[in-house]
Length: 152
Figure 1: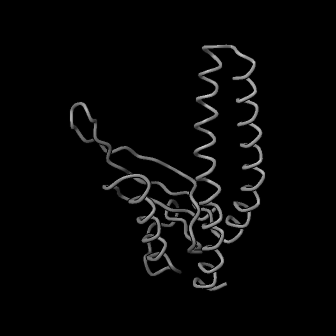
Figure 2: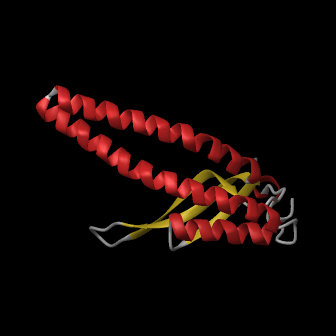
């Protein structure tokens, strides 16, 4: 499957997951609040609220699991090692920390820089690096350095 076809397959799945995840965020917050209320009151009504939200969360999980399976069947799994800058809000002092995460990306590239070093001419390694950078910028850090990547 070429890159554009993979992207076209992913977009409807992302859209569907987004709607379900929005609902999950709301219901999970209500679930936590219901637990806190029950801890204070120990009332039967509050216990029923917890059960109601738990059942809805279970339903949401049932809906979303097959979507993530479809998503992961299209995406490629990588081990990504990177350094990211964290700033202590109290001291305003920045420090770089190293992380390793298994992440999924659209680009499919047979790569292992842990053992073989970097070769930006290999397969789609530049595009993969751009996709990793976009992810890290959106979800982790504004300052980071990708150290190694390995297709799993």
